[in-house]
Structure formats: C-alpha cells, structure tokens
Image (cartoon, rainbow, N blue to C red; front, side, top):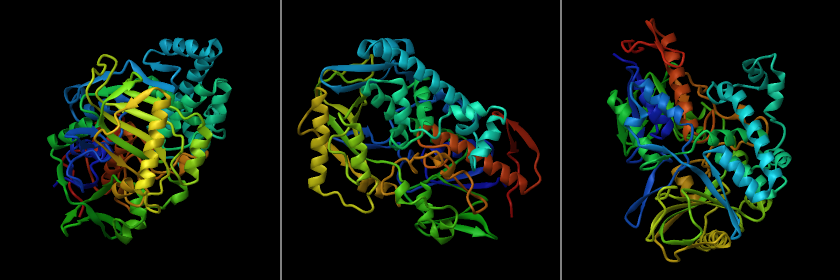
Length: 518
C-alpha cells in the first residue's frame, strides 16, 4: 500500500505539494473547508462576475513550470500565460505617470524622462545591486531549506565569500538604502513599495528585499482566468495522479501515534489516517490550537506584534474614467512615512497609497467603456481579531481611497456594485492571524531566520504555504511545497527500506511501490 499523506488546505502550497507527492505514487488526500481550491487565490462574485480577491501579480514562472514538469506535464498545456509588457503604472498626482516595462532599457528611459539623467543612473545601479542580492540568495535561501541562523547562511553561501554576506545588506533598512540610489523621493517610494509584497514596512525591512525588484524584472505574467485558474490547474494535475480532494469540511484535530502525526479528524468527525500531514495554513492557526492541543505544541506563535500587514480590499464592477489603467497600477500617498505610522498606530492610513488591479486590461486590451472588474487594495493593520470595523470606519476608508484615486486623475463610478473586505473578514478567512495576509512581517535582519520552516516539533507534521519559509507570495508558496514534499519523502524513506530513484531537481525519492508504515 502506498504511503498516505493528508494535506490540510488547498491553497497554492497545498495544491503544489499534492501534485508533487501524488506524482511520486503516494496516496494524497487534500482537506479544504471551502468549496473550491486556491485558498487566498480565490474569486468572489460581484454583480454576477467573478473578481480575483487574492494575489494578482504572477512572477517566477519557472517555479511552476518545474512543478508541472516534475509531474510529467507542461504548464503551457494547462494555463494560458503571456508576459506583461508593462509591469505596472505609477502615479503620485494628476501631472504624470511612470511605467516600468518588461524591457529594462525602456524602464530606464522612462525614468530618465520622468526624473532626469541622474535618476536613470540611479536605476541602473539599483538594478545591479538587486540582481546581485538575488543571485546570492536565490539558491541558498529562496529555494533552499530554512536556515536556523546567520552562520548557517554563511556556510551555505561559502565561508570564503564574506563579501556576499555583507552585500545582501541585512542590517540597513530598505528605505535608507534606496536613498543611496534615488534622490527623487517618488522613485524611492516606488521601489520601497516592494516591501509590501511580503506585508511589511519599507522603514523596518532589511535592504535585502531589493531582490524582489529583480524577481519582478525577470517577468510579470498574465494568466487567463487569474491566479485562481492556476490553482484549478494544479488541482487537476494532482487529481490526474490520483490525489483525492475533500471540499466543504475542515480539519478539526491532528492525531498522533507514538509521538508522530498519524492523521486528521475532520469537523464532521471523520478520521483521515496518514503517515504524514502537511498543513497549508498560517502557522499561527496551528499555534492557537485550531488543530487541537497537540497541534499547538508543534510550532511557536510569533505574536500579534510581528504580524504582517492586512488590507482593506474593494472588489468592484465599475466604470472608470480619466487615468488610463494598465493591469497593475499604484497610486501613491503624498506622505509615505505617515502612511506606515498610521498602520503602526492600529488604524488604516488616512491618506493611503492604493493598488488597482484592472483585471480585464493589459497593454493590448484597453477598456472600451462599460464596467470592468477591479481589485483595489489599501494596506491596513492586522487587528481583525481585536477591532471591529464599524460602518462609519468602512465609509471613511472608502472615502480616503477615492481621494487618492481622484488626486491621480482616476474617477470611479460612485454607486458601482462592490464589496469591501476588511481585517475582520480576513481574520475569519485566516483564523488566529488578525487578518495578516502574509504571515510574519519581514522586519529586522533576523526575520527570515525566525519564519516557520518546513518541519515542526511533531515528527510527521510539516508546514507549507506563503506564511512559511521561504516567504509570502504565489511562487514562494510553491517553493515551500517542494520543500515540504522533499521532507516528507526523505522522512518516510528513513522509516522503511526502499529502492531509491532519481528525481529532477536533485532529490532522491522513494519508488511508487514503497510500502506504508505501520
């Protein structure tokens, strides 16, 4: 009998792990409380149309190409993906816009036209530094197992490469180092925004996060149907290899036998036996006892003080005018420090930066009148478990959002069909997090070492997803799934005699005929 794996949560991490393990012949059961796959990568209906309510920016296409390849499939046969020629459109007021392009030479030219020759030179230097940091950390941190402390990173990088450890600039803030590259505060603000990709403040994150700019410069991709279509494709891939999915019933308790994870009890009382369990939920839910008292012993809580950002998210089916939207648009606050000071103070910003994803647009498909699907995001504190947002506060946040849009020349239909998700709704969706969307904030030099890793204190119980190592984001969740799959297979192999077979990516995997443990 094939070894059995129970996966709690059908988010991107759980789906990728299910596909990878099922393709190796393991008996995989995925348990999901919702009625659909995707986790945060979900759509909600507004005015009769589905609008992406989760992640919208897709990078590191190769991560998913590798998952599909390792499962004997081609990503291009399952989802339609094309490169975005404009990475994002940016504005600070109605006086002008700045686009970043897939072609870095065009971005440099645009920055020079926008802010002068010195700014273009600063962009060249910034790109080079971001690329170097990414080159140092891609294999050693992003695609490697979690490291316990800086000496471990130094060992993995190479003891003779002391300069590389200093080059990642972990002890300086992103905001400070960006000031070395950009005298124009608008550009400093633009590239500081990358810290919010992992739910953090640029004033508290290490400059190491400049690597995100290099990741995005490698390609932003548009998926027909959005990220939820990618989730559906991953589920189909896992099912093709025999994975079973249980939707509509959540996991209630972790079961153990002789100190090792042995299965899951569902909310309806059913038992799902397993030789290994992967939880694709925020580790805070595990620490809070959402899988019972034994599960709570498996990981440590990082506490409310270290939560990432939450958000106010409007999903709207609306007519727009004025500002010419691209797929991804950022309309900036005139006072960035104040924006994050407001959030630190436990309140949404009074004069926020606003991200607008125009889901029906790309460079080749401008909107020609009529309503379009919009996801509009403002950063907010993760206090959804301690503060109930009143209707007055929701209206105030909506007015503040509209004020930013109007300052930059974007007019939004006044009474358009829409819904608003606040930290309260995200706390319901992501229990025990306060609505923190990205797990632990990446604040301080040690944040990466303190993020929850693949293995837990309970043998046979593993973590995957955007709240675990290597970090937040769709490709990071898939990388965490690969790490979890590798750990499961290694640990199961150590418990039985097996015939090793080679697997792409350098992993040694048990054969599909490996027997189950007792």
